[in-house]
Amino acid sequence: MKTLSCKVFVVKAMRVCVSEVGFVEIGARYGVSPENIILYGQSIGTVPTVDLASRYECAAVILHSPLMSGLRVAFPDTRKTYCFDAFPSIDKISKVTSPVLVIHGTEDEVIDFSHGLAMYERCPRAVEPLWVEGAGHNDIELYAQYLERLKQFISHELPNS
Image (tube, rainbow, N blue to C red; front, side):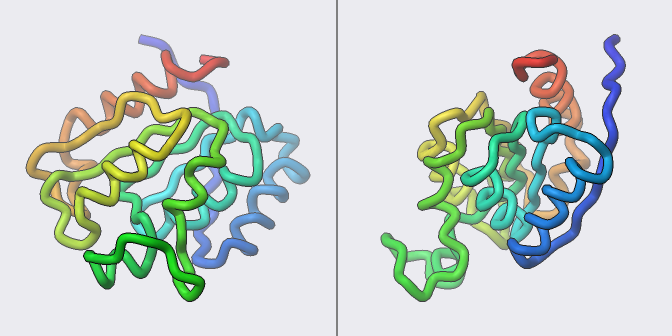
């Protein structure tokens, strides 16, 4: 089995500007180039992740239970993005040039599975997604295929793996 040699930096941020500072700071402080950074966002954390990935090159992006937009979560029948929708990830995902792995539970009770599917379908560099049958919003990590898919993606599907 191949061992991954990498540094893990956790940047918890609800505001895009904070996560952007974190992204830039990792490069400056630790000498990590963007092509060696994998952006990972879960749930609402996919919003700044997609925003960063749409504006900066990085090694890869992992979207765990992503949302299309805030308005579409609150009002599921919403079909377009309005100017007052603060989190329009569905409109930004097409600008992401890095490989993207989308992970979503089919029984997600917080962010409907249709959000993950739509983000996957709109993403130009999407790899094979992980749809976890029967998983909800906060239990995907408990399924064996979660870690297996992450290892496969990082170890074998990225250009520098």
